[in-house]
Length: 230
Image 1 (cartoon, rainbow, N blue to C red):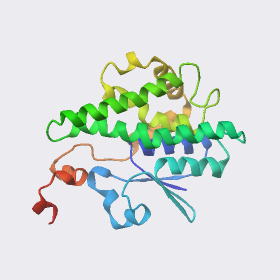
Image 2: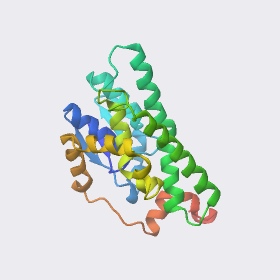
Image 3: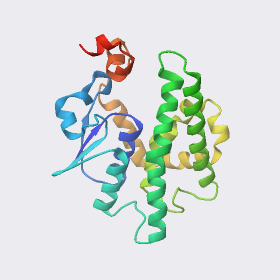
Image 4: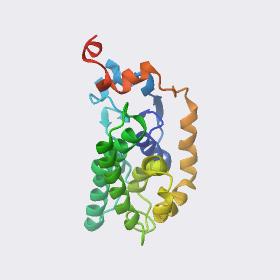
């Protein structure tokens, strides 16, 4: 298998599954800040020009949740098992993260930290929705060790991709408001597979500074129309 990767929440969660499952794989670094995700070769794999992408023989899967579901089926590991009730819970929470928690968290970060000028309505809107989604997770973990109950699953890997950034998402008091998530995160972070994934964050020389060229790559919507057309 090949995992097209950069150290962002969504690729990290897939890397964690591969490490936990002991699946042999090759990491293909994709430097987003240099625009590597916009090349013709990459968009042939994912026309949406985002990481991660998993190449599994002749099968190409993009979107982190789709990849996790593919890997659960492929390996038979870290899924809900054969119980139809657990399967319903598993799919519901997987898509809750994919369609709600993750995109609202990403937009909250953008308007809190990266918007070129203050956007009070947008910042408030996404901060509120991100906080609301994380509050649902906090309540879920109040009486459960993991998202599905007593078993560590791909749901926890999916949530783990975003969870360490909670103060960056919601503010410095985030952990005071989320003790159950903090307890859960500390347990996940202690897993040996997480330490192996963390090493990937420094293994390749990814660009880290956001200069004018990177802003043109990452935020093309901010360019003037005539500049965008060049």
